[in-house]
Image 1 (cartoon, rainbow, N blue to C red):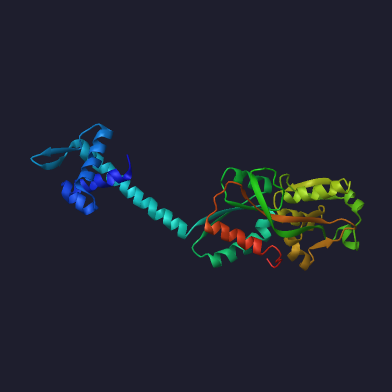
Image 2: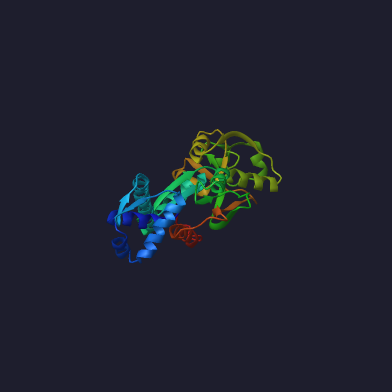
Length: 296
């Protein structure tokens, strides 16, 4: 049974006359009668009594009238709300920790200025967790620094990034102009957790250089890493974007490494079967257009 059947039924109930209902619906009387007959056949019950060429609702008809009006109202609400969502929109963003702390706030701010009616929700965690949320449709778009392992997730580069070696201003590295790679093997490292893109980037480069490392503190955020390094509890390799203020103030010192660089790319990620609204495409375009703009 269709919504059209119910709308015709309600119109007949309001007019209690097939001819009048047909005129208001711009239909023939026979078409209206046929629709009512189809309803009665479908539910196998009489909806109207026809007495002395007048219509009277049966008990079943009164029951169906309540349901029909409710369903028609629900249909109107659905149409109204869906159109409202099309005009306003919602984007659910996921960001790995470094991207969320250093890049995403300005991106979202720029997007909102150009899309005032669009709401943005943000979830922040490591790359592995962002991938899991994309796979289960808990977010629409992910911005990550780590590598995506699922073949169901697509990715596009949108910004280059570099990890740098940092130490406190009382650490022995602070007195050296450059650090040789093998000096790293003597130090205690304060690093992000497994599943983090920053951790994987660090480990991949160290393995490629055939260097060993000792982790004495594992953190799930950059602020704790910076505080521990400032306190002289070890060294770390972290996004240069994340330590700009501390390096400028002298709390942390960025030390160049001889022959070693930790380079990576921030990526836009999404499920390969994701349906994109215009608002989602606008956000992706904003990220892509800023790929080579390091101002953000």
